[in-house]
Length: 614
Image (cartoon, rainbow, N blue to C red; front, side, top):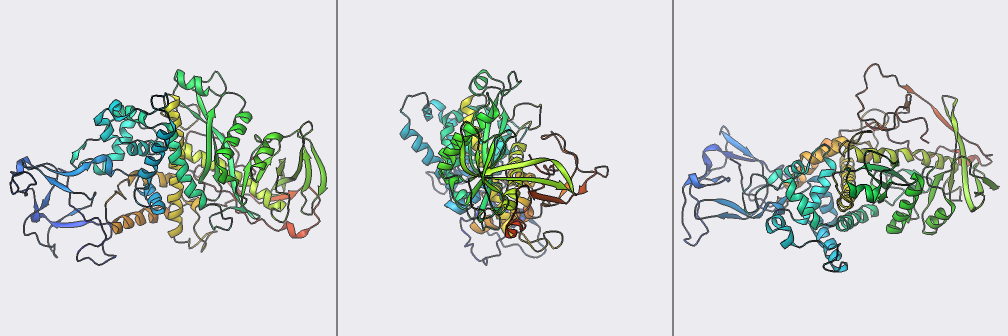
């Protein structure tokens, strides 16, 4: 038998001082619980029904007294708030349906805190309305109406449930849609409702998701990113990684394996054909300080990697003008140079720092005081007026064997000194490689040589799951920022007394906390109860920290391993002192000061970081 006790939808609980509500746990004397007669709301008014016909919910007996010292009590946890319906036959139920009470817990609470209660449902409704307004009825892109989907499916699997399930599914590796829906509905699974109390299954979800096109999920994701990007533009934010006068972001691409269906293989290709699975190529632009995605694009994997990723980068810049903010510096690896494309990106307002491939002609026009130079890049299609910084890295005084050359359209050394640029490029690992790996780690079979990572069986479903993946990643990072904001600084160690950084917090622990506490912020619960539950989650997360800036290294292994065992006594690591030496002549000693950028993260999935990421 499930237990339920009604709670009021406000923190103004009668006779309870503010601040004493806590998690809202309820202690009731055992003898005061009753499944006895309850006055009904039927036509006969004061009718009563026998207890054996009652279903699911308990009530308090008449004359129940407050619990006192020494009483035997039963402790109840509030599940949700609603209106009770008592039928003539004695059945008790809550008005409404289970679908109206599901939530993504602490992750969705971050959105409600910024946009008000019910923000996600409101964004979904607005996106779907916009989709309908721009899609002719009867076209191939039009979503089926409720009559086609089925009445029961439309009631149990609303568009809000579908979007939440897609996001939750991106956090639950190795599970099917039955398991995802069971987890989503678990907080209210035993509560009887007047309509659609049962938890829907995977087959019903597969039908219902066809009524939520990918453009709707993408619009919801973009609406959330708009809110989060506005908070991540200040280079002086304590959570930011700053290089000179700029906040560092990084962009990079990755491949995600898809189920091997003819539709997926035709639309997305298989990367290096013939491959056992089709792949979708995903490019993400990430804030380095908080690992929050700023923009993304996805497309086919066939063709050259550099051409595919460069095209996606232009799509991101075109679709997301906000990432062209003058205070952001976007760092990229060697796949992204290309004179015409760089002209278009910088013309759109992007501040770029991209590593140059070997063999690119660099003609020096003017040496600058910090050892950098104003240069012309290329031979046939020359890119004029860029700035080039070249440097070597020494580990314990030994050259690492590679010279780095990075070109940027920031030509003022005062705004971006050469040494700050070297540290900004090194942050590319923590800005792109680590966040992308952590995002993929929550997907099914994320290791190399395994099976499909997404559940999508056709391009329609791929276009849903990609924005849902990024939406989930953005909300996860928002939870980490909230946890870091209330965390107590470390009492010892390298960061003793310093504010806790969001990038210190464990991604794995955050995912587990979000999936375990989906009922933490169920709509309708008293505000103070929800606040207490969220504070407890944030407090627990704030203690699950990784150690950044350790300067530890070991021989580099595979870039993506299926499992990384806990470091044992046989694992040899060593502390290394790194020194960056600018290759050009330095005449201004003021620009040789240590950069203001902290070193990249060393996370629980990033122990094999090389001395300098190429």
